[in-house]
Image 1 (tube, rainbow, N blue to C red):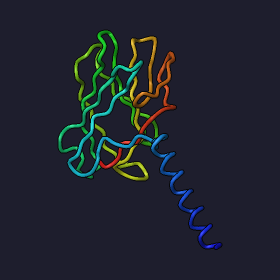
Image 2 (spheres, rainbow, N blue to C red; image 1 turned 90 degrees about the vertical axis):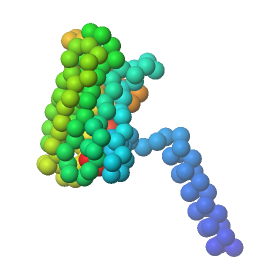
Image 3 (cartoon, rainbow, N blue to C red; image 1 turned 180 degrees about the horizontal axis):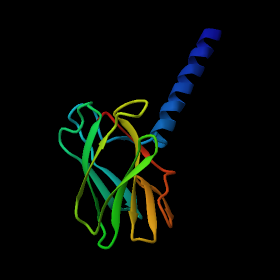
Image 4 (spheres, rainbow, N blue to C red; image 1 turned 135 degrees about the vertical axis):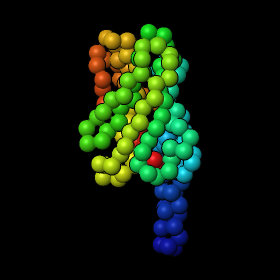
Length: 152
């Protein structure tokens, strides 16, 4: 009888963990989803895509070198991408909607080919910074909300 109760309790715990993961997904992982599988990332503000970042085909090769383009979706606003490589480093696009190339060589992190990253959208005075649909608004860059870019 004890074994049956322990089994039922274990199955109940496993079911609750699955339900929590479905409702509360973990940290956004991405940009590389296996070799040769690049994924576009975004910053979404008020339900609309404000910043897009699209890795180059062939970026996900496990060589610790990341190449991508970033853009703002709003005229007069600038997109930037921030990567943590023993300190945050920003790459800025132009004010406007043109795509801007950037690259990142990750030879210094504890797990090469893996870096925290987030996006910002600014007009010179107001900054929206975050990852996906989670963001902060302020008067400068804010690194509090980020995702993990891995597999490059």
